[in-house]
Length: 311
Ligand SMILES: Cc1cc2nc3c(=O)[nH]c(=O)nc-3n(C[C@H](O)[C@H](O)[C@H](O)COP(=O)(O)O)c2cc1C
Image (cartoon, rainbow, N blue to C red; front, side, top):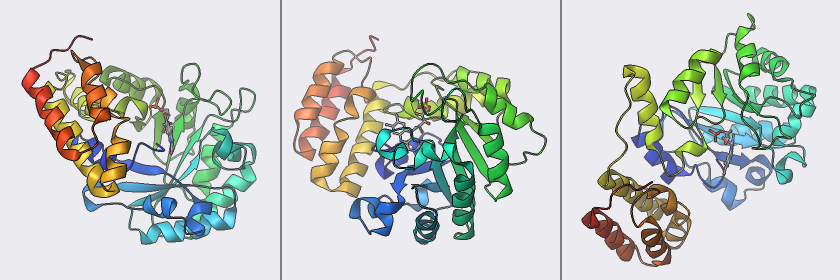
């Protein structure tokens, strides 16, 4: 997820059992221009394996070249984003825009597959709009040019994030006897019960979780525990919340440096302490703090205050 799934965020997800993670999507145009922001996103670490680098772009040759550049960064797989709905991406011929031009999507995918020895996976949506839900065809065509797994978010581009994700077409892909690659379902999974229910109901090989993991990386261990035992794990304690937030913070400092590390961590505090007595006040103090030592002290204070869950 853009501006979310950077290495510090991925570290806390991995610590809680995420099986497979991806980088934020990386602009192929940025990479080819050698833009520092795009290149930094290629950083992957051994502790996060298996890890995929996700690329997006509108030009077939540039995407092919970027598959080569990304392979040198040492990920376990390369993923192509054909799902991003935002204007700046989809209206420039990238992301979900490729759902309107299947021949080009097929060429682009083939170019990426040709330019890397790594497995290539794809993330997409149901189609562009309600009248063009073509993902069943897309799955087959992309499998034919060599992708090794497909993840489908159960909304169209036009829907953006509105309404409920509809997984029925994702089930249709699985029902196609020609499909032999793993199919992952995505959209609105926010509890262990829903993860298992959707996996079984729609027959997918796995589920991908996005928003529910933001500030709540425990979702991964909760889902895995529930799938394995049928039992719900107790929610994280205050100590666990603080420890995870602290790990995220320290990794942010390490990877981004002090200034950006402190600044970019601010968007995560509200989620880590959501539902905790006094959460608003803790968050305000953490967001106002400008020195790592002060942030560490506030985190210690939270534990010492022994706040209870109120929401
Ligand atoms: C802030 C944000 C950034 C996202 N960035 C990406 C991205 O870079 N690549 C991608 O494939 N999907 C991205 N997505 C979409 C999610 O991966 C996912 O498909 C979508 O949120 C639905 O799943 P969820 O209900 O589990 O969140 C992003 C979503 C959000 C909310």
